[in-house]
Image 1 (spheres, rainbow, N blue to C red):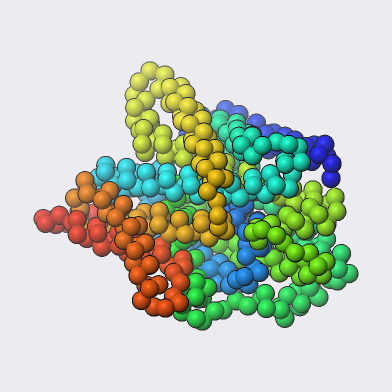
Image 2 (cartoon, rainbow, N blue to C red; image 1 turned 180 degrees about the vertical axis):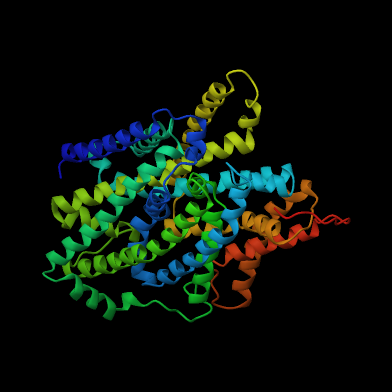
Length: 492
């Protein structure tokens, strides 16, 4: 593909995204930005959330991951189903009953203002770094395989993508993202399916024959029973379950889309549908990974550097123009879906939870206009912060992105898991002012405990269970903060 052709593809796809944004953001107000006026069709939300849940991590890293961990990731996907069931049965009813715009408002109602601010800050830190990781992964691949040929520096590529995302989400917010995510999901899935078809055709095989080859290979290994391994099936299932509860159910980014549904019943339909669809979708990505490795072996191609380069190397260098185009479009879709909803959620949390703009401008003249103006300023600020963090990752990156993302999430989402679990499953009142101490201490203690486990039990590797351990430490810490006088209170 020539540089001009790549540029045309990029501009064409981006034009489609902006057209969808224009259609959906007409007559948009602050309520549209924050919760989509609670009019989003549940099936559109469910389908769009597939792309948001997958993002660039699944698109790039999971296929490459197959080389070392085989299909063990599928056990984690099964854990996702259990996690979504908990969200649907436990969390969504609370969020809708309290009519929340930001889910962290719950912590304020249940514990107090300090707990509320603590939960919000932990989300901001978690989502900024998580979104930056996802965006960094995609932009780095685009930079290496595409934009370096134009002589465009990495920092410019990052700024370009974030500014474009900022512009098409600025007015409509979640109302726009519900529909653009549907577009991103479609192109990401089409990219994977077409890539598989092209590889199978190139090897003069069929889908059924390739599936048989993959199933008979070592790549199809799913269950690991070794307790010391990070791929142990119990660890992965529980990890998938609690990561879903924390990174979806306790994450403003993901829940903001659910809260844009018309009512609780529609939101629960969305969750159930999403959980069931993600199983075959993730299986397709794992199948793609195995097919890519088999194809690389067939061509005697050696992948240099990280396994994240497996898909782009084969798609751009060995699958012809069609393969290159569909990969490039899929990657752009992954880049946009990695950051658009995160940017909106971060702006929402900063506006409502930290700055409390909704309260500040609630009962004053032109309050709606002033809220919009200040919200848009914070939108620009969050864009600048994410750009800065991505550029920092470029300087310090030294390990697989997917491992970094989930490891970090285990530490930052753990306190949120502990806070919400304590609020939902106990009736204790706590000393609110000490909540930040517990929230900060929990990840530190969890880190040293995991290092201790690895020293005591030779060969033991801590995996995704770090999230559960971290949440448990937070829960215990909150028990220590319960008030001596323990009047009966209503659990929210």
